[in-house]
Every structure is written in structure tokens, then in C-alpha cells.
Image (cartoon, rainbow, N blue to C red; front, side):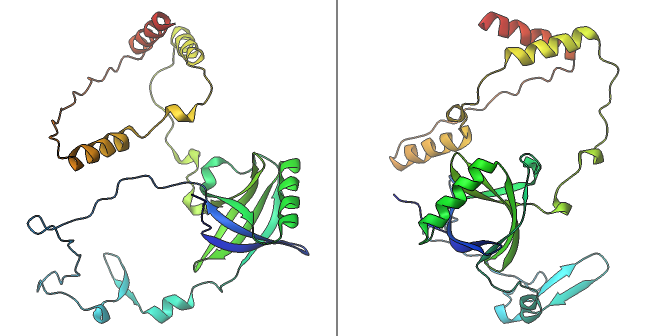
Length: 257
């Protein structure tokens, strides 16, 4: 089945305008549950209940508020709507940055780009991104929200990745330095050897969501009316001795090699 575009926009830098379609580059594969009435198997619905009276609060009597221990600040729909950005289809390029400047910590959600009527302009953009290896820093408005993103090449396909804002990214310097005593040369050597023994190519097909796979199997098993026997898993006892842990790991890897 062909991918469906989730949004349309126009990449704009200088006098250049490239109409594009956005396609989600990631897919939600989680199993989603519905809450049903146990006796009648009908969907149940959430209701806003007053905590003191236990009665349902009608929609027109609900108000959004920012709540703290000291106060409650209320807002109505018009006040919040006034803050929304002006609708636009422009994806404006602010800068082109050298590769590697934007750390992966800033990346949020990727979208593949496709042409929207002007194949020639789109292909020229794709080639320019691939040849330059640079990332475009862009901003745009989509569905009443302002975004900042990275426009880059991915194996010949232009990709737009939404970025986090500065106050959402935690600086590593905010973390406490690691404790413990000075490591011995033997421990460092064993750790380095273990890292080298685990060196390999990245093979994404070998890394799957095992819980989701088991859950999907469970769904199919119950769907066919079969009984399920639940097995409890044993937890491993933690081992706090670094040296002994490294030695045991190295022994296993040497034996396997």
C-alpha cells in the first residue's frame, strides 16, 4: 500500500520555492487496547466527574487552568486561540549547517519528503542536499503549532526532522560526576577488551520489540480460543563487583568465540 502524505508545505529559501509532501518516517506498531464492559462487551467512556459531588461536569462548565500549590490561573478558548501561530504552508530555511553540528539529542520525529507537483525543483533540492552534506535549519507551522527542524539527506531521500527546543534538552554537565574509586589498569584493560569483542555492524532486523511480539502472539492465541499458560520470570541477582562481572563476561565471550 502506498504511503499517504500527512501534510503539504512549500520549502522556501531566497527566491526558491519547492512544494513538498510530508510522509511519516516512523510507524506506531504498538497494540492498542480498548476498555470494554466485562458483561456486555460494550466500550466504556471517560466522564469528567466532580470530586466532591460525584456528578458529571458538562462540557460548557469546564475550563482549562494552570494549577500550582498557591494559585489557579484560568483560561478560555479565545485567549488560548489568540496565542496560536498564523497558519502557513511555508517551510522557511534559516541556515545551512555543516554536518554533525546538530547532535542526535535534538532530533524528535522524522518525515520523508516527496514532490508535490514540481518534480524538477524537488529533484534539484534532493541532489543539492546529498552533494553538500549540509543540514538546513528550518521552521514552519503545522496544525496550529510552530516547529523547528533539520532538513537533510538520507540515502538520496530528503528528510525533515523536527527538533527539540533548548529548554527540552538536558546538558550532560547538569549530571553528577560518577562516583567510585580510581579504576585499576586491569579493569580498564578488561573493559576495553570486552568492548572490542562486542564490535559488530548495526543490523536493525535483529532488534525487535520482544514484548510487542509476545503480545501479538498472545492476541492471536486468544483470538483462536486457545488457553494461555502464564510463566513467571525469575529476576537475576545483581552483582556489584565490577572486576568479577567483567571477567565473567570476557570468559563467556571467549568461549563463544
